[in-house]
Length: 230
Image (cartoon, rainbow, N blue to C red; front, side, top):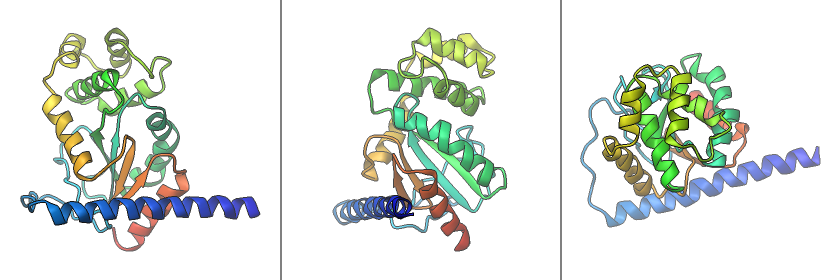
C-alpha cells in the first residue's frame, strides 16, 4: 500500500512539474513574441494551461479517431526512439480501445524526428505511407519490428508492404526525397514554439504530458477533460 501511494505521488508530481515548466515557457514566449495569426475557423480550442495547438484538417491521414471527439491527444513523436516505441506499443493501444473506439478521443500525430538521420528517414517514410492512407498501420508495423531502432530504406519498404502500402515504388521515391520535409519541419517548429523537449511529448487539449509517464497519467487527464465537457 505504501509503495502504491508512493508511485501515485511520483506520477502526480511529474505531471505537475511538466505542466509548470511548459506553462512558464509558454507564458514567456507570449510575452516576448508577436501575436500569432488567427487559427482557421475549424480549429478547436484547448482548455489546458499550454494553450491552443493547431489542428489538422478533417481528412488528415495522420489523425486517428472521430473528427467530433470531445478530447484530442496531440502526439509529438518519431518512430525510432525507445520511449516513443513504449508509448506506441504499450499505452496508445489502450487509449484507442478505451477512448478512440468509443468516440471520445482523437489522436493527432506530429513529427518530431530529433534523434538523428534515421529519425528523419522514418518520418519521411511515415509521410509516404500516409500519402497512401496507411500511416497508422505503417507506424504500428515499424514500432513492433525487430529493425525499429535503425531501419534502412529497404527495411522500411518491406514494412510498408506489410502495412498495406500498395505503390512501393512511389513509397520508396517519396521516403528518400525531401517532398515532405516542409510538413515535417512545420511540426518541429510547432514543438519548438511550445518548448517541447526531445520526443515524445503529448498535449491533451492544452495540458502537457512528457515521456515516461504511465497509462494512469494519461487516463486521469483525459477523464478530467471529459468530465469538464471536453
